[in-house]
Image 1 (cartoon, rainbow, N blue to C red):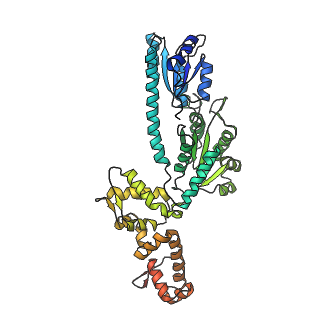
Image 2: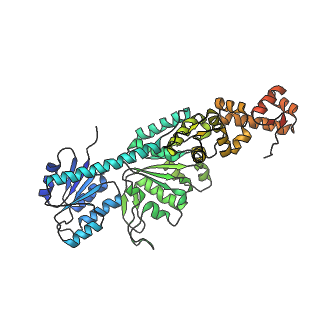
Image 3: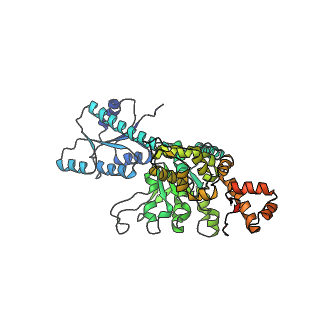
Length: 460
């Protein structure tokens, strides 16, 4: 059942507040507050779809504009509709200049109020649908391999358990942010997901970027800036490459994670914050702890649950699905096909850059195609290493059955035997414990022999 839209009516006219539920009916969840302080508490503790806001409050120097600025600063997605008896032209100009787009005079009809609320909610739903489509696209975990099945199980455990701090580990390009977005989307598609690249934040800016600041805290701080932990509104903060965060900021982050409180730069006030964290790293944090570049107490705080994101070479059977997804995603107006032989070549590569490199390769190949079909030659031009190591057709067939990682190990074994025998095929075969005929066949399949001659082998 679709949840009811949540509406806050904030006005010091209690008679008017009594009328709001009657005007809007039972289709909405309605909360009414008669003071700015009580309204602010509601806004900080709950997520509203629409806020009906008065401008002038008796016996309070603040105005509805101050509340409106708070709504925008929190960026929770609420739409503000000002319903006020204000007629002063200067005040009305201030209202418009503040960025308020919906204004109704107090003498408006119930129908006008209902229409304004309905339009605001419809517009919000359209935005959420657009965000939903984007989130689904971003969070699709492509692949049917055993590794991906296990990864999905881990994600479901993380979501169902409600764990607040998760650590994703995996090589660069494996799709850790995709996994993070999947977790956030499955937990609550309506909550915000805010990524922070910890490696891109230097010592001078990190406090302001992460923890916010108050006006005048430092040169250039011309207005208040809320921390990412405040604006996420109960959603997820994604701390990407947390292993690269400077030690000073690690200390401050530890306090935020432990206490769920944040103190803006230049302020003595400590604010309670509601958020969940997903951290990601491609470095071994235990080694970083030993090297004194990462705090051990922070490590135990961020890893209430650790999820390993597999490398592409460990799930080569997912490459066909990934390729077809990238082709339809990157070239939606074209019907690009790819041959089985070209797929075999892609599966023959070790992909040091993982899924990110595969997507980049497919984009580069697709952008150069004159005919909408990817063949072996296109793969070889994009990945010259494939031609050198896996040029033989027999090898590509083996790769299709066994995967590039196994073939790479076998090639390495034969290559070492050839080096040890200094190119003597008979001695290399004896060292491997195979017949000369088997040696020739396998060495040819592995791309080590061309025309029954040993390919020149580089020493490492």
